[in-house]
Amino acid sequence: MDALASGSSRCSQQLAALDIVHGMTFPAIDLSGFDLSRLDPRELRLPLPAGDLPGAERISGVVRDSVYVGVGLALLGAQRLQWERRLMAKRLRSVTG
Image (cartoon, rainbow, N blue to C red; front, side):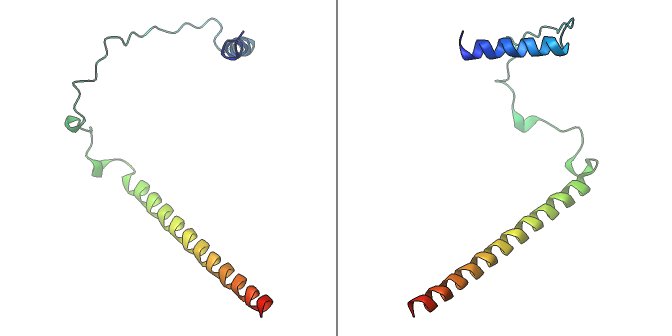
């Protein structure tokens, strides 16, 4: 038995043991006739304009704050690297004389 079949069998056994899917039936969905080739994404319209999305201001504020934090951490990291470089140069000068 190959690894995929044994993994599938083991997963089925675990699901049966947990009784998650036991006795449940799922509907069959036939997507063979589903065609997206004529869909033009430029013609899609959102139900709400972007400015009227609920919570848009809060989301944009969180994103902005996250960017500020990221830039701040990057600057602190760059300053730390510069400090370490200067410290190493100082140590090398004292060793080499």
